[in-house]
Length: 92
Image 1: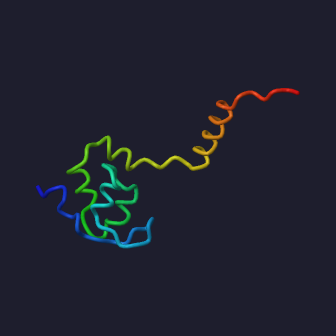
Image 2: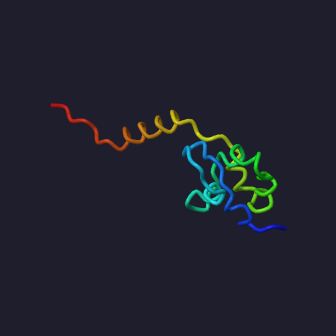
Image 3: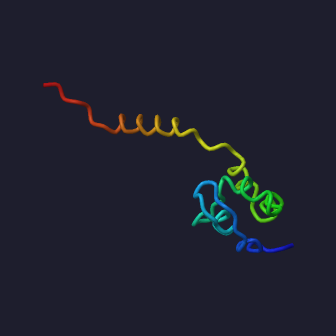
């Protein structure tokens, strides 16, 4: 079986950043996290799904396959959190 770093030097155009980036960036994102677009960006260049199944545990891949949370939901949750943390208004 080939190693985890076998494709690290290959480059493709990143749909999020708009520039050429190496596969290493997609599989690490500066941490130990996979880019959610890794399948879309790399499926034409390498057997990315096979690679991911060979090198990452199912729980990490489950997070990759799931849809991201809608931004509106996150925003509404942050607004509600701020409301709850705000001290009550004083009446004059």
